[in-house]
Image (cartoon, rainbow, N blue to C red; front, top):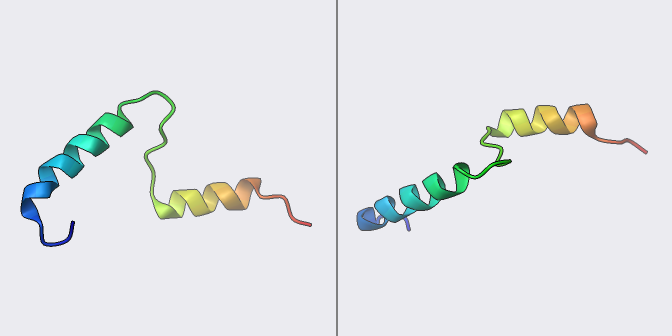
Length: 43
């Protein structure tokens, strides 16, 4: 997909489709790390 500008439209359409479903968590890597740190069970 890199250096294939004509595919950007298709990626945008696919992401738009996915994020508009209920229950989809659109987030950043930092938010994922915070969530994991707050919910991870340590042995």
